[in-house]
Length: 282
Image (cartoon, rainbow, N blue to C red; front, top):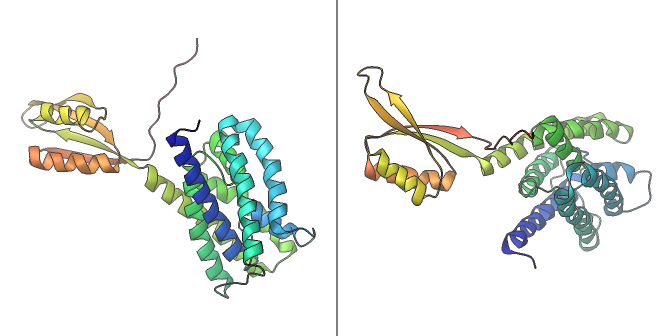
């Protein structure tokens, strides 16, 4: 049976994929834009292959899915099987229910801006569930894993080749707008992902460090480290508490410090990633 965490995760993946499909169908396709994605490749191929864009997207997704499953792992592959089928399926629903879609903005630049913002929100939701919307996102995920490249930058690099091939079918202005849109989408994805995952490293010097430490450990249920700090002026020895907390925990901790010791000396740093180095195998 599926547990609540899995149901929630797949629910978020569904929402994220639907947002991505909407960005593609309502902004990218009507504007003949080709930002780096499997749907953009499908749009280009539709000029020479007499199939719906949703069908071409499905074929491309299945091909790249096999590669991602082999190189990234079964968990990623299992989730992306779902999104790779769901993405063209939702696009097909749009094709049937809203046929012959035309540009909402009647301006390719505005279409690209709208596409970049909307698709980035959807992709950020999907990526945070350790999945992909399929297609070239799998390529970006591979670059992220093996080259340690940020997801946004990986998306930009993998998408530039797609933008360049658009010269075979569209004018230079459309290609330039697509390239700028690909780059902008990568920036927005990174911003949203970091905004979701950002944590704070809080360093606290206080005469009430025992009370504060007890609150961190037993109320916030977070970890902490203790360091000996020596004052440069009077050489007094004090205990420094260092803890890493998320946004919600940070807010609670600051409220508690304000009530417990308003004179506490606190420094805060932003942390984008927290990981553990695995032990070397003997």
